[in-house]
Image 1 (cartoon, rainbow, N blue to C red):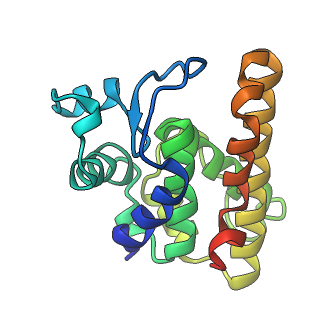
Image 2: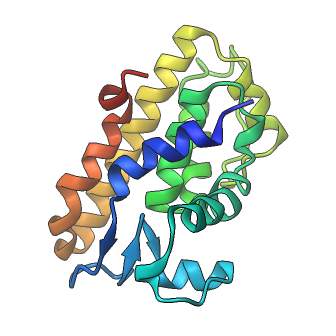
Image 3: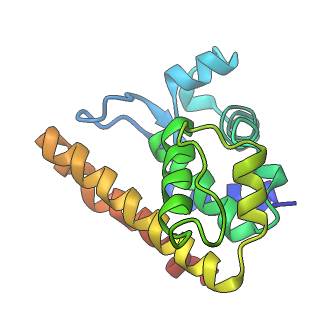
Length: 180
């Protein structure tokens, strides 16, 4: 079972404290939680007053639990998927996870392709939990590559995102920063 506390602490490395960047569509954020996301969770206070504990509860409920990451056996894999969900959304994190698994399965000789629907369910979890060490390395590298291409595509489609691009691509090297 993956450790949420471990993953949450890694996420705080990127998300920082309060921010209100003029080019950021998300508007005001604290610990990476947008004002809108906080309201969707039920937090109606000033976003500047959001506590780390509030952020932890929001991340656990709206990101970690939705992706069933408690069922993933490997902390590194769960943390990577969680990080993508925080920055790109839970659907995109699930979809990139499935795309990565389907492209590294050696024409289905290791496991059958899974439906790419963005939902991390029983089939996706089972494959993730049965990856060999070599498969895990291939999965993480592929997942990071797909994540990078997502950032590239949204930046090419909306050049204002160049403002954020360098920060985003740091996330594709999460494992290097934390030696995990």
